[in-house]
Amino acid sequence: MGKIAYGFLWLISYLPLWFMYMISDIMYLFLYGIIRYRRKIVRINLRNSFPEKNAKEIKKIEHKFYRHLCDTFVEIIKLWHMSESDIKKRIIFTNKELATSYCDNGQGVMVIGGHMGNWEWDTAFGLFFNENIAFMPLYKTLHNAMFDKMMIEIRSHFGASPMHKKEMLRKVIKSKRDGKIPFLAFIADQRPKKSTSHVWTTFMNQPTAVFPGAEKMVEMFDLVPLYIHTRMPKRGHYEITFINIEKSNCTSEEYPITKRFTELLEENIKEQPEIWLWSHSRWRYKPEDI
Image 1 (tube, rainbow, N blue to C red):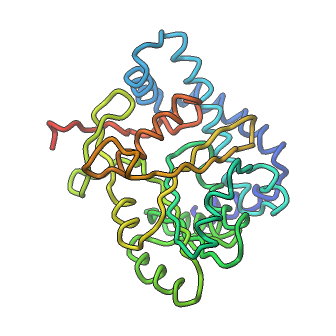
Image 2: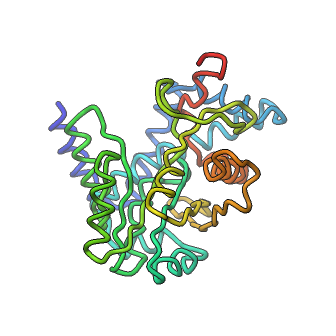
């Protein structure tokens, strides 16, 4: 069954994106209206995050989110066989020179983002920078080996070198030995397991456990931390702005980079809430559950 699905998605990825968006529109009607995929989780998350909004405003964001969620799925599949010219038309950097300036000076970079826009398209970042960088997005292994293989292929399409956290030390050291500047990317807004290291902060009006992993990597490899601020000006187009996460600008003395990232992500979400991943059970447990 896995091989059939893999082959089907591989073929689908050759379709033009405008046609795939027609598939997305059908998926939206099915996912939202018939299956009602995680509708309860999405609505609770939205209500808790925006207590100032009324039911009509919440429902409007909800509808937009599900449309974008379906778009995200077809865009990820399309990335498998997308052309360089097409992706460069659809990802626009407002201040690419900020990240470039560090790389040109031999300084490694860690870009930290959330599940905003289409985070998988961020694996194409390496196309926009000089060849002297080693672009390495971190990923979590999927339980299904076939789909894990598929996602690695998709993430590697534009020359990125996806790495599991267990490979990180070896790959970063190797990139430096090869004369490359390490350029790491990390999606840091997942929910940590209860048993793993985490930090508590306030995020979207709620006490939230967050990963300190990105901050530890920044310190371990002497990297410059940059937040990826994401906007979607129109369907299938994303605007990226890099923001320095400077300790001097952080309001917290404990885990300042982690907590400043959370503040920047919250600002980003409030600007365009429908493009964040609301279907994730982000607030499954509270401090008193630990």
